[in-house]
Amino acid sequence: MTQTAQMTQTVQMAQPVQMAQTVQTAQTVRVAAMAPDGCGEAAAGLLGGGPAARELGLSRSELARAVQLGIVRAGPQGPAGAARYTRTEIDRVRSAEGSPDALRVRVATVAGTGAAAAVLGVGPSRFTRLARCGHLPPVGYRINRYRVVVWLYLTAELRDFAAREPGMLRGSAPPPDRELVAAGADLRPRTWRERHVGLLLRRTADPWERAAVLASVLPEDDVRTIVPDEAERILLRALAPPPPYGHPQVPAAAEVAARLLRAVTPDEIGWYRTSLDFALTGARGQSKSTGERGPT
Image (cartoon, rainbow, N blue to C red; front, top):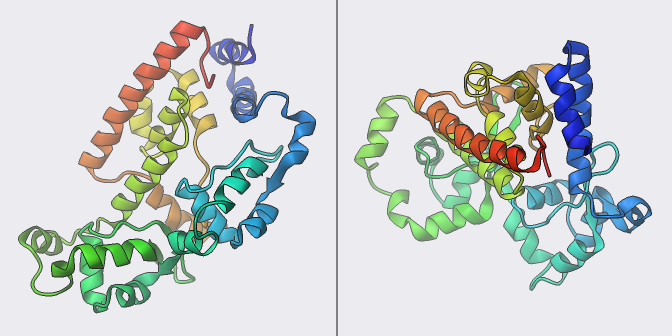
């Protein structure tokens, strides 16, 4: 019996204390699934985040953004879950045309309305309207000392938008935008979640991990409805992605940021519920064919 199959059997029979141990098992299986065969001593050929960033000519935050965007592929995780990078991947990225300057341009961000508006060459009020109406999806966030969300935008995307949509930078707002403004809508959290979930899904082909990504965006009550099997819910929690880079550690700020991670409106929740249900159908089908529940 494989390790993942043993985990399934344990979950089905477990009491609450044993279930906590099963979560640790699931996380171990996840790391093992990511690791190349015979990694053991070969781990010496892997680079940690600091050395990898230096070799690529990036800061740690720039490397994190490159990984988030799928430009740099992280290798198997270290024992504590820290990202590591293969020599092959570092060499691949370094050999790209224009590296490292071109790579820095792709991952460069600006923070806040004023800086982003300056890149577009518009006033802060127009930029705010464009962002709140969903035209400029943020790539990240920070929580300032006043517990206010400061959105981050890719500089290259802002410049592309200015070149592609010059009419949006002047004149009156189109009718759909006027309706959104009148309704007090702010689509920035939603467009950020869409981007975040999409990037996470592109980084894994495992059906249970993909289901875990989708479940992580839903309120707990909705997850319990879609996933009535407690064993499956434990597994999805164990495989859930960590908070994104830059997520605050200070409790007050973390509480504000945590609200950004969950779908809010009924239509958004409905979309993720449908997507999770579809993903679970595929994951359960895999489990039925392999005799295992979890990553393969």
